[in-house]
Length: 96
Image (cartoon, rainbow, N blue to C red; front, top):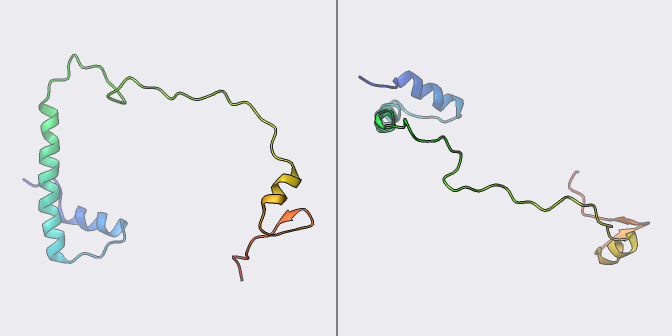
């Protein structure tokens, strides 16, 4: 018994904006069915005493405290700009 139908494969291909032939749809149906069968083996694993985790290592984000610092002066920024006019940095136009 197939766990995924050819119609579902075609639907997913359509959602992904992929043009697939009938032969490709049949091939992908077989391949996805094999993948799903393999993944279903996880249902047989005894996880009774396994604590749920989001990561295999006990890690957490280590971030520095967000402390505002004084930025550069306008003069220092303009000094490093390749092109400027009237206190503004000039950049190449990207719109016509």
